[in-house]
Length: 309
Length: 308
Image (tube, rainbow over all chains, first blue to last red):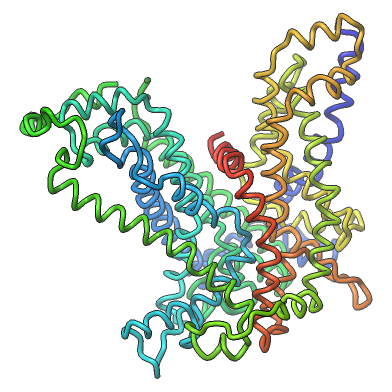
């Protein structure tokens, strides 16, 4: 029965595991060791400099600014996305009333599910081209054009959305929510559908309104999924690189004048433009630590009794 | 299940109004209807906010450059596909070809290696099984970003910067964690009886895998395959880092997403936005087709990626 079992196992595992270790695990580990060097990246010569890179980071104004922007994104994006998608999911699954079973989504639920989710499958490149056009600084941009069409915009002085230091980060936040809300709606929908209908029916018979049903039935039973979503969104906003680097000005994004700088854009600029690979790796490690801290804190803070159903 | 049981007294006040009307608008009263209008309005508004920008860009394919730049609300006067041709010639055709060359190899290879690893991990007991499995799962927890600098030099050392085979290997490696994770749970659910019967009949382990398990796992393979097709088609950061020209004579092997963004940034399209929009449309159509045809698998696949 077990003839040639081990050669078979080894044969099936060697390629996937080998490739994975070589190109995924090993680079992750190397990031940590390079962060203690003054490596430029151009040659294989580097010196061990201990914690110097980390000390430099602590005194680097741009990095501090980037860190603050990351913190802002970390709070705003998950909170807003989750609130919005919870609302959508509730409407689509239990928002409708009057069906035979008493619990159903609003009309057109299937349609909303398809449409809202769509941005999730679009590439960052598409999002970049799309929102460059939407945010364009003259009246040919979709937002400026629309504002002017309804008489709200100033034709002589249109808003330069992505070049305004006060607005640029908010523009990014909006795109992240725009792209993500549908995905989390589907995620929460799946969780809501696993809640037995009789719980809702019982609440309905007790005369619970929609608000009560939501806050007293849905929310507590969804807590674990929300927690997962928060961690996932936090990690996502940690690396807002793709969007920011494509939408904002400067090498690898972050402009104007670092007002949308995040760690990842600064990391890439140090790596590719300034040839400071060791320094870039140190930023990578800071990001890694922050990601871990956020995940652990979220999981601890929101720990509740598991609800069985 | 204690939460719903602790309802406040407010509920009692509402009970009488419910009697007798099993369904119908009367149940929720005014609060319900206002909320209803508001929520419906919001759902519609969000749908418009998703569809309108996309539709607006698609319309841009048929406008002239000056029409696009003069005002947001112009309507195309001539419905021609010239922009597609111009975009194609400016590089989109090449980028599309590059992307297809890479994906024709990388997607099947991802599936094959992923299925092999997942199968062995799911169905065979051996020392270190759990360790290898968690090793794979852990890899999908961190952003690719953190590995980017060393990855670049690793691929460089292999002499594979700006080569198709280099990007293929990297795509496969970074797609493995989710593929293994998803297929692992799938192989576990398959019945063992068929497998055992085949082994008694003298089939080798390899034969059992290819002739029995793979066909049985087809639904799972399709789901994760769609996930990989979308993911690799839309990949941006890996090609941006690894597919750069190494010298003046080196060929431009940009992937579609990467090529479009660099065209946008280089200003090649400064005077021809319709062509850029056409390039975007070309790269969006396959995604749209895959998404609309496999909408359920895409949604469940991506959702499974989150809940680990």
